[in-house]
Length: 94
Image 1 (tube, rainbow, N blue to C red):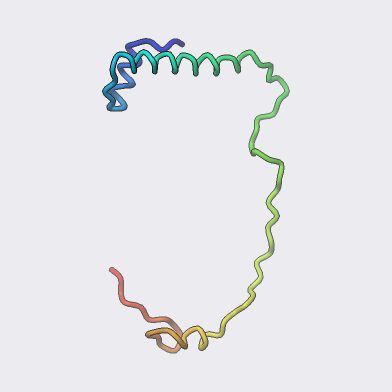
Image 2 (cartoon, helix red, strand yellow; image 1 turned 135 degrees about the vertical axis):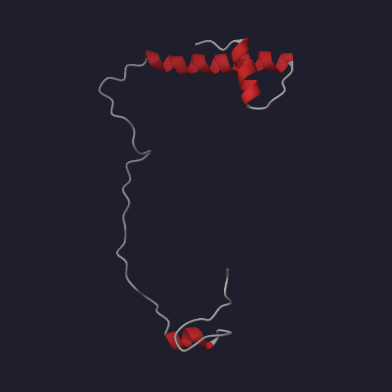
């Protein structure tokens, strides 16, 4: 696939750009170079190579959930500006 002027005009319209003629020529060359680099991947023999799922072989080591450092309810509510005996009271948000 080659990038031509009509495709550049369409991309320019879709991206809501206003390019000069020199910018269009430069972008056309840049996009053609990108496509050439990507087409080099077709030359590689990828038979027998598994697709990459993750970037590294590390495995998550999850820790078990353990409740620690609990604060008593009365201590937690002690400095609250407004509370009933069980909960913090806050202004209603609508």
